[in-house]
Length: 459
Picture 1 (spheres, rainbow, N blue to C red):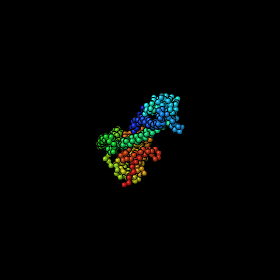
Picture 2 (picture 1 turned 180 degrees about the vertical axis):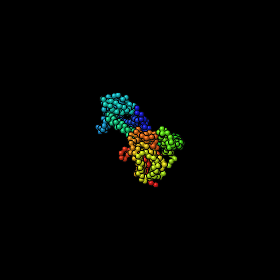
Picture 3 (picture 1 turned 90 degrees about the vertical axis):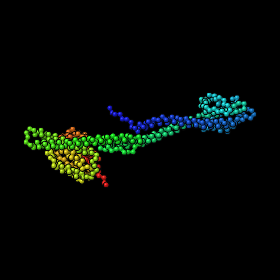
């Protein structure tokens, strides 16, 4: 079952920031709509009230009986509206019609009479039409006259739709802007954590230097915890290297003495029946001595105190290795050749010789009798390099990654190797900031191992 991937911290923070936003903004939008709509309705009601006050001012009380005389011009002015129909009615103290639309008497619900100076606002119906009504009372001596002004709701409905649209559009735009601002703020806030993660990705057992980045106060304890962990790992790795080096060093002397004793025993007169046994013992001791040497090389490759920034020429490294192999006995028919040119590089000569020694030894061990082995060096745009090529069986591409692991050998590997040679060379390259590549031979079957080093920077 595939492991369920957890949501990123950035996405999680954004969701938790967005949830309150999605709840608060609609509430604020509704509240804003209500306030703006109420203000707009109040302005329109004030306009109706002004019309009612104008009508109230036209009531004439001379002669003891109230009367209203409105001409055609003023009637058109009172009723003028580009969107709505306007109605008005002036009633005397006894409910008689003094002026206007007598049909307003049929309003439902019927507003109660208003005392002088009081005003009534409300929605009413007249023959199935909804109207907005303003009714005020006017002192007419013997009682209160009633002045009513009503209009249809066309411009009020249009104004409500316009307000709702503006509030919704601006609310959505505000939500998008706040979401973008929140996303940007979260990214900026998590940038130090991302930088810390990138720096941790570059750490390994060969690079356990303390983290020194300037971080927010909340991340300082985390950085300190990682530095303490690096310190403990460094001490553990150093103890492991020291143990490995001491063990390998202690094994070399007795193994060398044992090998010498076996070779002397082979030279002395002895029963021919024990000769195969002595030969097998000699092979086992040689292999054990080789393993001890490789373990010692591995410890040296991981020693952080070694300076790998010395200026050297890979041609000299290969030449010294060639001189050492010239004094060794090679298997029958093995042809070891060198194609060397000037190749400046930065590194540690002893470690590079160890890497090249392991590659040559691997080629001699696994290529078989009659193998042709070529050691090359050179330089190019990426930097300088060393190569060891043989015409043996090679390593299939699918097994090359496994062959670089410690104590691992290919499925078809022959010989008496321990599976450390390529791993040691790869570790030495990593220590130098370079890389080891397993490639196909230039022509025909075989394996080509390339050690690439970074270019030498001009001073």
